[in-house]
Image 1: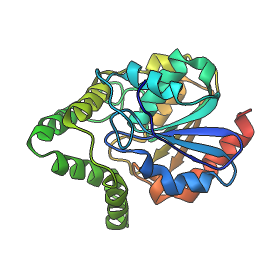
Image 2: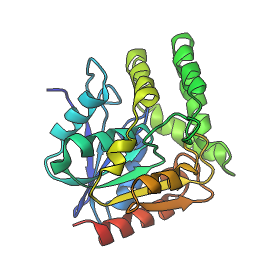
Image 3: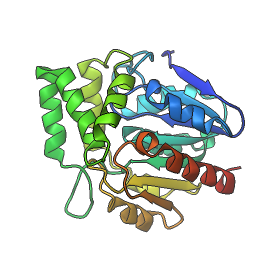
Length: 257
């Protein structure tokens, strides 16, 4: 069994936090403690990231299966960025383990098409190519994109760097695998078929997840709760932690058993 690193805080209704590409559980720590004033919050490490063991092959199905094994009770699963793709897959294939979903700066189809707002696939291809040349520089560029456009972007970039580089970066094979998931997975049918409470939180200044995707997601799932934090980018739990926590708390109290 793969070792999955957990960081658990507080007591109450359970929330599981799934981080994004190239990150680890430490990225959540301050925000998790904030939520833990009212809930039992578990930061869970994606395999091959931080202190979680590796899996091979690094596929969405394997990631989801390993994470579910590490959580003992039905929970609200919150996925950020790549983590949103993971929690959608968990809700699809392990519905008995998911009471509700929060998609934080996530997109069921990460890449842009003529009909769907997303990230330019060529940019993902650039990241994949540059990982072989200079992994750390590529990760730093990715971090910079997450805070681009924020008024205090230098402050938040420093905080991101501190959190991310607390642990060694995932190896190149794992990072490439994560990019392939983002490029290939289309979870729109999964989203439209959900019959559990779903909340989406987007940043109005996010350069990776266009805010326009929110309305597209509502068309797929009319019951979906859409929240937009106008001045936030891709890391609203860091730049706008109080607003983000307030949205999650309201959702948990109103929608979740």
